[in-house]
Length: 158
Image (cartoon, rainbow, N blue to C red; front, side, top):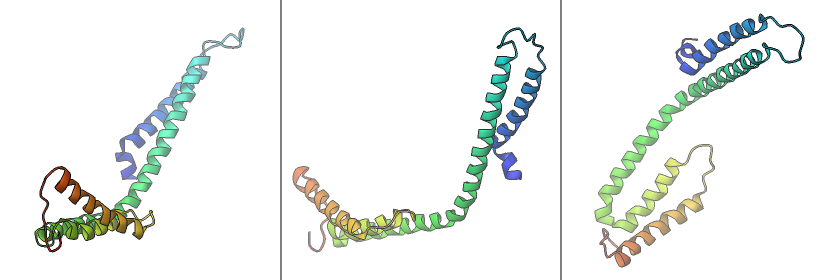
């Protein structure tokens, strides 16, 4: 309960819910003559109901958001593992690029990086990762080498 009261949106929704109830109570206490269909209490009632609906929506959406945050807190440990694995992968790539060359070291780096960064709710398509991991370094190597005249790290084969 403490986490709900510390959330500003949830707390604002609760406050405005009670404010709208008090406003509606005041709107219904406005004296009318009953002469015309729309009298002086019409717009205050409309505003009160709009505020009541908006505050209810704010309470519900912030409650759902807090519920999903609990689920995300459980998965935050797996996110830390992913970050650490990406850092290890980058360090391995940096250390191997001079020895193996740009193309040879970039292929496994891009493949494993694609595997690590794909969320769990998306199905992993390995053939796309393989094609991407092979084509991107080759195109980048020849593009930088021949069209931009920049030297890329060359290793065993390139």
